[in-house]
Length: 625
Image (cartoon, rainbow, N blue to C red):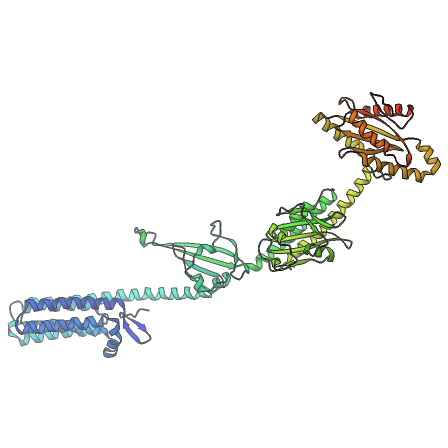
């Protein structure tokens, strides 16, 4: 803090401040110039005395202006640098006495005026002025040549200079007291602000107009996880919101990887806005970070609970309505676990492999994982225990191909279990490192895995019921209901493509006699083996169904009458146990109804039976066996 008399306190005592040293240096330059002037303008002993005297004064003032000499001067002058004011007074009096010229009184008058402006001590200024007056009066009394006609004039001017110097001195003292009072208040406010700044529980940082941090309190450094020497001097922009808003929540990722949440508030101030010179204006930015991590986690837990309930409810609704809930559940798991990808793998090929049947965030649909290997997926499927790896790349059981496909930095394998039976495996992946899922994310994945199990079990039950509704229970081929729905589709396709469509009815010959001879169980067995034999002779797109009793219906899309007869001939000759069948067929003309088409095929079947059975007849052309 600056001392009231132009000196500032240090560990070693008072040393002159920069302003005082500047004044002494400036006065030293003036007296050096006066020394040269006296050497050029005076002669005789007066020139020697005044040149040396003014030179010595200039040298002493110059030394007093140097910081190095400050402490030595303090020891010699007891900290009173203003005692140097007696040198100019003595010089002015000596000049009048040595030269014997009264007009050099002007130098004394100017010196006394300077004392009023430069010396802050009232007592020292008074003593120096009195000493100057006394010396001048003594010189006038001692030297008769000084008592000329101008003595009265210079006497009045000297008295006026003393009075004016006293007034100037008092005015400057008053102004200094005012400035000192303002300075002390500013220092008090600054000290208070500094204490509040560093003691504030909220993180506070201040940046200049270039966005460089110039100060940061301990709470700010603790929140961002960096020491003060790394924060100060860095850019403030890395702590601001991405959208440029002046307030809002933001996530702070510390250098150690931990995450904190803070509420950001920005204040801006332009110092010197009224100054016209833009270069003198200064813009400051104050950034406040309030740690709201605990509150954010609590709010997030509540939001996650609501989202989890909503996800479970949505999955349950889709299950009740018979829809496939896989997509809904997978998307919910990804959302609630804050994951980057989720994959559902279900058994296929009689349980020898798992196939990716659903995925969100990864293009892995159709990926097959053998269950006879040592992969992590196979292990979870067999053990039924979930496994989480923060760094799966270090585990040899994790496929590098899988990690590459999903860019997995951390992964969770969750079994899907129904009544103790493992039905699928959920694979959850993150493209960033996750240290633990022992929080709500793991709970969400577990609960939604249960919902997945219910959905898969429900889907399996629906497929079974659907198969029962559209499958003949004795032969295992589609029933009449499935035939009717399939014919609607086939007719639409034929209309669109213009391809032919032939339907046929096959009837097992003498089936009643076979039943009566061998029994109904043997008859049922014959129907089953006949259905299997017929299916083995059909083309890929052909459709076989049991019409009722011992009759079967066959749809042959893309086949005209001749091609259809060739296919049906293979069926006729494939009858097991030496039994025979009769077949009637008809080709659709695209204008008749399906019932009319079947009636024509049935009429052709009646012709085949009347012609001796074990043969094929069409509704248009009669063929011999």
